[in-house]
Length: 612
Image 1 (cartoon, rainbow, N blue to C red):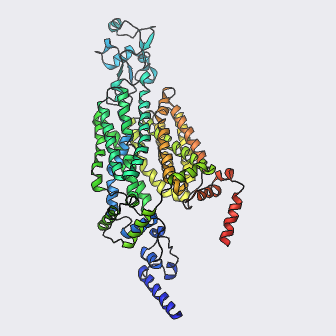
Image 2: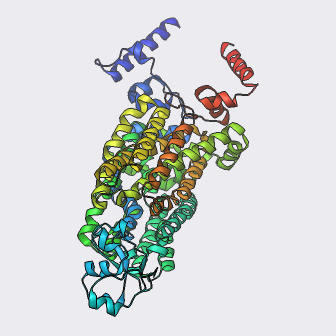
Image 3: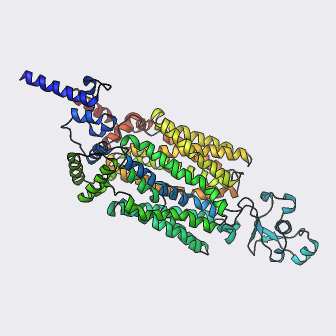
């Protein structure tokens, strides 16, 4: 018997050496390879299978990782899927940013006087705008919302502005000198300035209201009818809403169309983003996630201001930037449905079809046993999201953790959106400033990829938010022009980093059962907070530096909050509420304040079990 065991061990060792190869670790070193299927992507797959043939995946996630190890974690199929994200990434940038250029406000404007319309613009301005003759081209020093009560026939004869005449609000609209924005926008066509200036932030507020509702509607739809149909629906709704804006005439019909367009925001890209990450091996997800945003979202944002200048027509710009949404019509033919969703819904034939297509395109082979394990585990999975979220909300520690996550993420979103919308108000060319600040997406996200797993989430979030707050506060007291513009661009650079850090941090802090619903709650809440950013920018009507002061205050407050949250670098993602509570207790300042009298007893009991 001993001889048989020795022979069997020698045979296994030889098999392992054959799998590993002469240039790889020895058999003894290979014996240290983990049998955890979820960690197979960190190891030599053949060696892991040889050493752990009896190991079964514990859940559908682990089973899918094993399938991807066999099928190829980043093969031809996944590369094609990465390329297919392009129109959707561009769409998200266009839906989000196009309104900055369609409802931009030309700052050089004054009351229109019908009797003066035959004169050139500069003379009209000097005769009708109080203070214009001494201010010259500096629009900040003439009254853009008042004009004289005068006999304009007499003014035409003397070609001199009235003296000592009372002023009244504009009665016949406004004249616009298209200098900073060299084309007519919704604002200049419809006179959304002065007492009507709140229409611009109000329409943006309504847009984010649509985004909030869309997140709930299409999130529910994705769980009921599938990811791909939801992706198609979100993009088509966005296309209809955006194009309909072209045919509006009043503020309210424009706002309704912006609400419809807002329904698609985020979902027009995030549904395909999540879908494709499900087909990518875990070791490739970080760069796929960040590179897709850098190239597609960032690239479209850089292109947008030059497209606006080239077209010089807000209607054409709206139409052209809406067209990529129609690419969603090809999604059912080109994109796979989520294999996890199909299997959990009992659609086993379609699941097999998707996975066999992955296998065929990559030129690999998925063992039948791996497919059977995935189907079985997916079919038996019990959805307990509502109960788990309820458990988070009823636990004092986890409730505080969730609230802090909401505040941090929403603050990062507000700071990011406000800095984006300040492109035209920092005293430099709006189009150049926007393009440069959008270009910061690329190096900033590369830094996140390189540094996040080295310095940790807390240090990254606290450091970048503190820098944002400092730069924005300095910029508030710097005169308008290039210095303020570069300070704002630098703040946008660090805002990209803090925002993306918070996105990842949220998912690592919540327990498994509440991760999807909790993350969704945090995400949609940020839409509501972001809806305040247009009003923050509108504060420049009272003092030019006030929006930057508000942005700085929000960033510094968020930096302080991030100090309280647990560090997740090197920590396993919590599977249960108890795991999340232990993470709070042992890895955060928050744990010092929330540490209960029973914590030590729990630790002692846990240590006793380990010793036993």
